Length: 146
Image 1: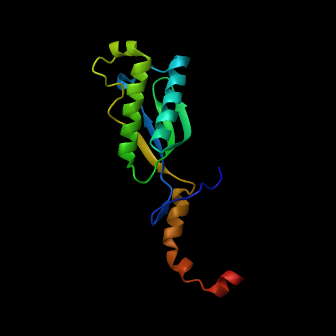
Image 2 (image 1 turned 30 degrees about the horizontal axis):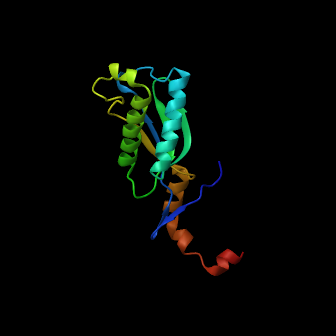
Image 3 (image 1 turned 135 degrees about the horizontal axis):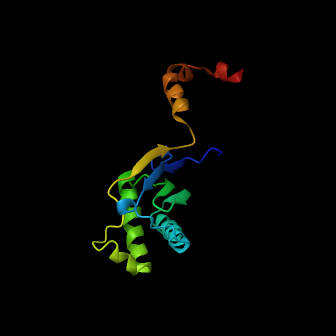
């Protein structure tokens, strides 16, 4: 994968990309049907774009889903996950009202989630960069000419 473009917002520049995973309540195999899986993918793509998020990767498995999403800096990770999970459940129940029998209280997702920050630079490279800041910033123009 190549270097991703850094976003500029106000006086900030950065990349807000997360790997998020969540599953249906009771870990039911809710998405084993192809139609359910396709509906989830379509709904998630639409919702993410409505909130200014960019889906980079999406994998809907029979009993959980993985999303790699770029989030605008104005939205926190927790809020982004809650927006996606909440709207996804709402829209999915509208398409498949019979699933309300399985989830009569309307809580389709388990409360937990997995998340991790990602980017185009790995942890080892970032730690090396921070550790060697003194040497990087003490270079002179002569050092760059050679």
